[in-house]
Amino acid sequence: MSKGISKEEFNKLKPLCSCPDHEEIPWNENYTKKGYPKYIFGHHPKGKHSNKKRKAMSEESKKKLSESQISKRKEPYKATEEEFEKLKPICQCGCKEQLVWSWRYKYTGIPEYKHGHNAPTKGKPLSEEHCKKLSESHKGQVSGMKGKHHTEESKQINREKHIGVKQPLEIVKKRNLSNIGKHSIPKTEATKEKLRQYRGPKSGNWKGGTSYLPYCDKFTEEKKEEIRELYDRNCFICNLDEKDNITKTNKFQKLSVHHIDGDKEQGCNGKPWFMVPLCIHCHGRVTGNKYEEYWIKYIQELMKYYNIKEFMINNF
Image (cartoon, rainbow, N blue to C red):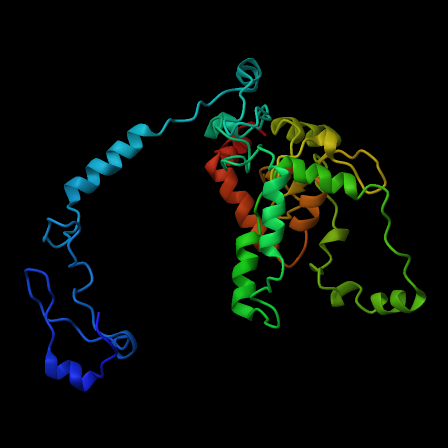
């Protein structure tokens, strides 16, 4: 590669590629700093004894590669809860932890790894020397975002990426346990007066007074128990077991049965039931007015994927 060259000099020289084709090298602005290359991109010989230009892969070879990769993949075994208990599958990452049953395994099959355990270092504790080397390598480093701020577009992209992301059960349990015994700071009279101004239609979560409307008469405690049992008493979004659904005051609470579209007349006037059980944390996220439309679409797509909607119409 030569030194930097101007566009006028480059046009006078009209350099050719050093490969057997000897095609004319196209102009690039980077040549003013680094100079023009000997070969056009993709024309450089692969080895010492090969002078052939790289060729695009044909459609037949692409099909053969895709078929070979598909044949290597193993289809997950779709098992019931009884079969799952007999198998007692273990995570294949090396941690030797037993997988936790989920009602989704009836339709998607049993996975090879626990959620987040497919990394090669997962389940293997790092040595003290390795930890020291990592800490020393990070000392003195300054974050690339120091003094900078995200744009509104990047914020929206980050929101869309993180909304609906399922966290591992271990993290959900730790979060619930960490909140036990914690109470909110008592509000002063001044803050209470400010909050009173945002009651009713002025509230950000106002939905036209739907909270005052009564539920259908058929929406009884027995119906709630049927919905909880249908999903094996697990949260529909994060798969948290009902046993771990604990409030901040260290009290056990049953899973909340959530109306997906917010229609309280479900079960009456010929309207079918569309409900799912949710834990305290997920129920708070779903009922918020800010992302309510997103969560309705998210739950409906999951129900379509598992054919739950048709099952509820025919059996409930």
